Image (cartoon, rainbow, N blue to C red; front, top):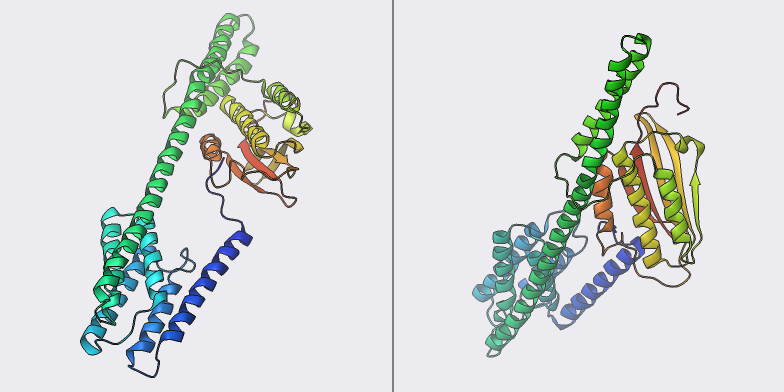
Length: 395
């Protein structure tokens, strides 16, 4: 289902703690092999290594990856030039600085959006790493520079690979959204045909009774006006895409029976599913495209329970929420924690199902959210607009 779900806070803290611990160990090693009583530039190298390492922590805050990479590359190159000019043959090669620059190289090749900027910054970081062994000088400097070339190439390749994965994922998300738009568009013909048929029937009836029963013309005209407005509303939401011919006709007005059938079929798979519909929700009027979207949300949520939480109890609840902006139909599919360990739900960090669902729900002016529950289960919740009640109806 969704790709936007963030890492759990506990896992995020563990990853940051592991990174900080590794960087601290590298800095302690650099401190142990450095002679702070020697040339004054050596403490500066240790301090710069710490600054470079800080650029790796909490990348979602502060300057962007391009700014951090540019500052780190420029600082490292300036320090190298300063050592070559002011203190040749003096040891000033920090392991912390080397590792931090390599990780920044991976991040730069991966996350900097503009390709030209990513190439320029990655090149600067690679050169800064390769020339680090020139600071101590000596006969082995060229050898170490050559070896670091492979490390730089590996870091750049890893960053480009991650960038390729992101691009592939972005294309997949775009395809999912487009498919969902097309699925909505397939319903457009049937929805419009349904409304227009009602308009024609009401108009013909008004023509037939305008002389014999003129008092009944007004309700018919009101019905024509209402059906016309709903038709225009459906077209406004869905006209961006074209209808495909290989689609079965939708059946407006049968949402509750379809949900009952869907839940019944799912319950037959060895999982207990409860359908809870409040009396207020039973009486609301929904646009046809909203009905199909409600059905799709429940269907996708139950499908993911079967894939990732097999055997967990599920509750499908439909209720009415009242807000300042009007009434909303709340659709919630909540499952308990699975009895056995399972993979991350589709809607976690790997799939695209929620991407398509969100596209569909937002297309009909609704909203969608999902996440883990306190008991370790999963909940998908959607809110849909409802139509105004017809005068004289119980809704």
